[in-house]
Structure formats: C-alpha cells, structure tokens
Length: 321
Image (cartoon, rainbow, N blue to C red):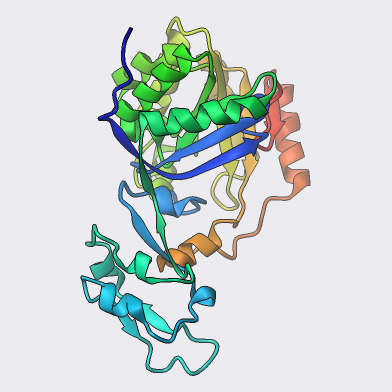
C-alpha cells in the first residue's frame, strides 16, 4: 500500500463546501494560491501570489489599544493621526513593508478580526480529511473542484491530492488558465474527470495587455489535451469582459478555434465586481470596480451564435451533467 505523503504542503486561500457550480452535483471548491497571469478583472486577487497575505477590514477596527502596531515586526502599521473622522481608517498599512513579512504576527494581536490572513498551509491529509467529511453531503455526481489562482502552479501538491481522490473514488474537476507546462498538464489528465480551460482572448496582443502573458501556450495546451487519449470532459470557459472581448467577432473566432480543436462545450461567464472588497482589504487599487456587468441579453445573443455554430453553450458556471 502506498502511504500518503504528509510532507507535501500547499497554500490554499479558500475552501468552499456545498457548491452547485464548477462541476456536476454538489461539490467542494478548493482554491490554490499562485497564478502566472495578472488579469485586471481577477475576482480572487488574494490568490494571485504564492504567499500568505494580510487582509485589513477597517469596519471591524474598533480597538483603542492598537496592539497590532506593537506586534508588527516590519513597522508597517501606523496609527492614522487624522482618524477622528468616521470616514477614515484608524490605521494605515505600508504594503511594501507588509508584503516582505512572513510572520504576520499582527493578526493574532487583533481581537476583532480586523486583520486576517489570506492563505493557509495544508497537507494532503488535511485536504482529504475535509473532502471525506464533505462527501456525505455531495449526493450523486458530486466531488471536488480545484481552482485558484492557478492550481497547476502548485503541481506537486495538486498531483498528490488528485491521486488520493482517485484512490477514494472522488470525482475531480480542475479549472485552469492553461498557462502551464504541457508535460505537467498531460501527466495529470488521467487523474482529472472534468477540465475547465479558460480562454480570455484569442488575440495574443490583447491577451498580453490584459493578463500580462500572451496566449500561445494556452492555445497549444488546449490542442494538446484534445489530441491526447484522455477520455474526460473538457469545457472551455470564457469570461465576457466589457470592452475587451464582448464582441461578435471574438465569439466567432473563439468558435472557429474550438471547432479546429474538436472542442464542443463552452461556458460563458459574465464579468462581475464581487471581488472589489478583496482589493480594498489588500490595499490594492481595482481599476475595474466601475465596469458594467454584461447584460443577460448580450450573453444570450452570444449563446445563440455559438449554438448556431454547433457548440453546446452554457451561460454561467453551472454545467449540465
């Protein structure tokens, strides 16, 4: 019997139970930290970097002792001298100094959870304990979905968990940007039942401008998966971002690419601004906070186009089993 490797640890910034999207049935979603892309509209900014990060929630900052200032080893936290106004935060955080800290001792000094941590270290055993607990509530067709961040950034950790899931007969899904090493991706395919591959844009220059990387590797990896002997289910995902890819031209080019690769299914995900508060807690400016959400009519129109091209198209993150 192969024993579970307890030495492998991964950084996870969120685990959500009882989800009914991102895969069939009721599921547990596991979000791994770290991503090679820097999408300007990212709804999970706390998971972009492979590092534990400090979140500050000013509304919960009600302590008058300011213990966090004394606890901060980087001298990054200061009392705001102008905080008498209710509209101003009571402390200021020098994020450049804060981001060099690996202790985050300030968090335990905060009794009101104004300071919190994004990202915790888990062993494979830790994650499997959660999944085996949750599976009693999944029902038929449920399982686990790994997202992020980019889950393949922590490839050894992901591979170890997928292996344990296979041994325990747990349905696995992975959502990936596809900006990963091809050999790593192909190695893990036999352990994955459903694979969601995100395509932000077909145009390499526009992709570079909005995400920080071009899309050559991503498109090649889609082709590599469809050319392999893997018999799992592949679904393309495309988040519709106003002013970036919300055009019929983009949808038609995406359709042509899918047809050339032999991919039939696609999720259209509407942009949303639900991550705005996370940027605020990280002290990061979010330039997309005022962007309008795509209309239902537009998404239905794109769905009609894609279905007219012979694809199965689903609006939103729910995918029929």
